[in-house]
Length: 447
Image (cartoon, rainbow, N blue to C red; front, side, top):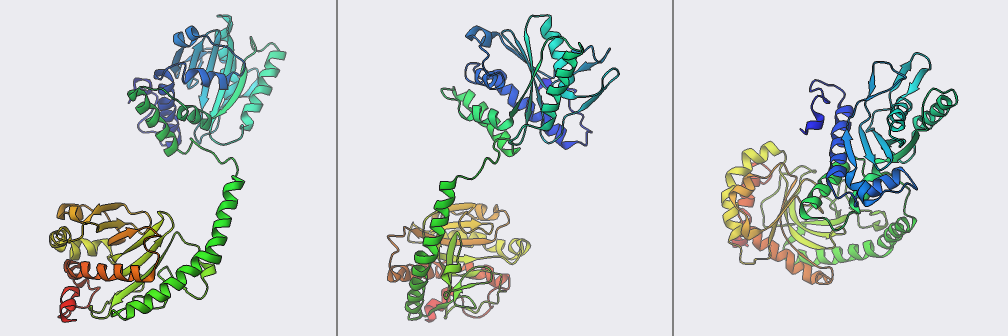
């Protein structure tokens, strides 16, 4: 924890948003403090104080103080504590940063209830008056619009000035966190350690959800997606449907049958070939199962099959074998004893183009993707919970542009799986494959 946070955060605090607000402020303004002043502090002050001028010397001599304590005549004997105070040239700029919490209120004996920003503006104006400087309080918040409290603080300061209740003319301005994130992203010509600080700060802001805000749809992008969906429904999906029907007919001659209860897409609930215009997917997958292989005992939701996948996220055609454990506990108990054998069998495959993939349910975004020849028992044992364990190879759409090409690839997958009997041993152990004398490896010999 940085020194600035000592005493600021109560370990027993229950207001998580306030704790996150303080750590976010500390991280961002520590970056402002330590990154080159001309790169970050200068544009930040320009955004907060439009029209103000700062020399190179002003920027180099500027101070950035976190959680300063300022006395204020409105609250005799008390102090206010803005989150950040920047002293640059003839300007004092206080930043009051909010994450999800709102602005506070003060009960002032002679004025009633005043906004937190109002009281901070008065305190800052008193400090600035003694130095002949200007005073500005900047509200830093999430969201795309200025909070109503900012406008109310301006009104209250105007009323106090009119009644002689404050010295000087403190200003209240607003900036979104997103503006600071944009300034950080735009930094160039940084040293290696400075880039690391910049990247870590932006990453924190993104994880906290303050680096971007919704600012409207890009109409061009929206129309392109709509056009793509129309092209997919009218031309691409029907072409894939025809392709799969021809491929299925050819595979039947090889003793490889349709591998799912209904002849349709291998998706939740199934989508038939008859209405490809209803498809709207990030992928299309078809399942197959050799007649000579043992019978599967799987439930409808489980996936164990040869497959052909048309991937629209990482454009290409993937042909492979997949098996899915019924539960993670089952995989740990029934599959893990076979990891060493499976690793040995995968590394012994003749073709180096085979890849082992693991995903958590999204076919197009594997969490693990390694060459089969690099698989080890330790790697398999270290996998976290997963939905699909796949052995596959990918090709471009151009290279897989004919049913006979994909037919040959399916047959190659079949032979690769038969050369890795540990796949069958795992699913037999988990009760997903019938425990018979045959197995994918012996079935090939018998056939």
